[in-house]
Amino acid sequence: MATRYTTEGQERGGVPVDENGSRIPRDQLNWVDENNRPIDYYDENGKTNLTYDHENSCADMWSDGAEVTNPQTGETTTYPPGRNTTPSVRNDFYNDPNNLKPMSRSDNSSKGANSTYSDNETGPDYEP
Image (cartoon, rainbow, N blue to C red; front, side, top):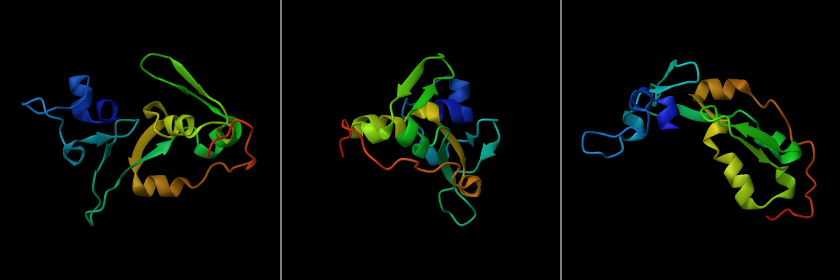
């Protein structure tokens, strides 16, 4: 995430590090959204403001599965419906950086839920 969505990562073309080669702490980086607009890491009250939103929602993945494309390589990962998968597959989807977009807490909250879980039934390959 820091490589793609911080000015330091974009300039370096990789994980932002200091002059000693140590990773720069997340709250000391200059974060930007997918349109390169700045996102403050903290809000005016000192609370973490930076959040991530799933481009393909978790509810949609649960019900229908999802395809996530790496914008740099064009490689696509296909996730089967979460209701019929292992925790490992669901975790991989949830944390896939190609499906996450940084945004401010208020922007994320104002989006609301764009989808719902249409099928709460689990399949034969579901593992809790």
